[in-house]
Length: 298
Image (cartoon, rainbow, N blue to C red; front, side, top):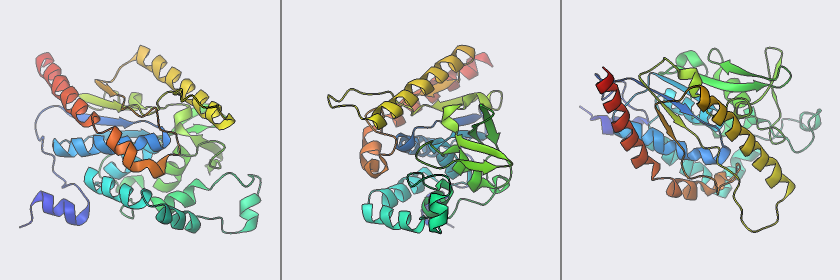
């Protein structure tokens, strides 16, 4: 008979049972932040190590992608290794980007210009093959956020085709073209809800929220227009988070040290992971404290 560890190594998936059959339930909100969201891998690994299987997951942008991996049953170790194998090698990234190229010249220039990539094609090329086609096939309920551009509001996606929902949640304006969904024009979920912990309210005893938005960091160099645009987005998103925290707070909220990384620094996967590994101990300590509070209140 294979051990759970052997099963995980062979399949990349966490066994169906949870190591915490009794005790408080957990839900996780993975925030947006582009490449800074690679730090979410440490969160998934830590929950695996503790035997915690969330009863619900929410995610925005890169957090939606990481949340989908966990909701599909992929282990943190598998996601860690897969991300390093793909993103740490420029030639592999280039090959996958080539496969994600527009199907025709007409598609490339049809109303979007040369600089906006088709995020759905890119996700098809980069996501692990174990990610299922629909929300209904996931092992853990998942909600992802997108922003309805013309309705100026958040849209929560949790049913039907999974890939278009993930693409909409990750469609950073000016980098990726918007996603058309049921007559709506959808862009990055982080614009309206950077860390969607509010979607998990009353879904679990302990809600864990992970903020990887970061803040602008002075480097001493000249700020480019791109730096200013992305930095302004960070300030805006942190303001949204601050307002949400005034209304309600998750039981655990962690902010890995990601500010020195830029939103598209995916090739720096090794650096992001090595510089944020301390969040694993922070999470373990926070969980111990949260469980103790729940037990006292019970």
